[in-house]
Length: 207
Picture 1 (cartoon, helix red, strand yellow):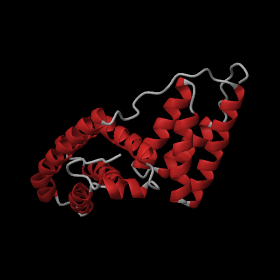
Picture 2 (cartoon, rainbow, N blue to C red; picture 1 turned 30 degrees about the horizontal axis):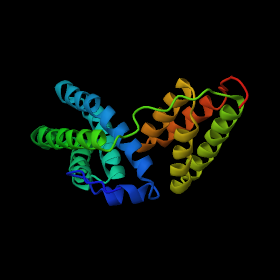
Picture 3 (cartoon, rainbow, N blue to C red; picture 1 turned 180 degrees about the horizontal axis):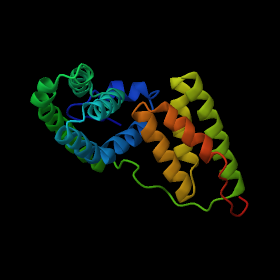
Picture 4 (cartoon, rainbow, N blue to C red; picture 1 turned 180 degrees about the vertical axis):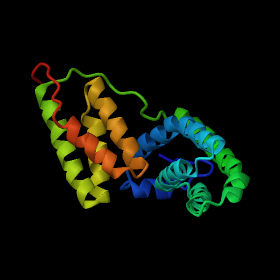
């Protein structure tokens, strides 16, 4: 399936996820859903002159943009991150709105592409069963080990398996949150969530 999105190197983004276009679309959906909230947080930091928190949010934007193949936006965010680290208020205030404008344009392009390609925002409802829960939790354990070893290939495979094996609303919510943390480079948060969620086994009838 051909995929063109203005502002994105979709080939690079798909390659970063092991060539799995389905997983790439999942990542784009997470990036898109989180986008407007992130814009609001960045602007709020500027209003409060909170450069430390601003730098944290811009770092996350840089990482997420790089992970989906938005190299131009990632480079712009990197310059703002460096300015935040050296407490260069003048540069930050002069350039942040341009970065946000580029970010919002990218979100619009991604939104159009997701609607065209039927990105997997939802999921097929299937009755949960003990085997489903066991497979899901086993994959959480594998993901946690992959995160500890920073094995990017194994991380991507585990995220895809979690998306495919999730059956309950709780499992789908967990998989989406983990995917979001990984997209933003928040590996410690993803690992902690995998560890906590691994003890939650959903009951149901046998398959």
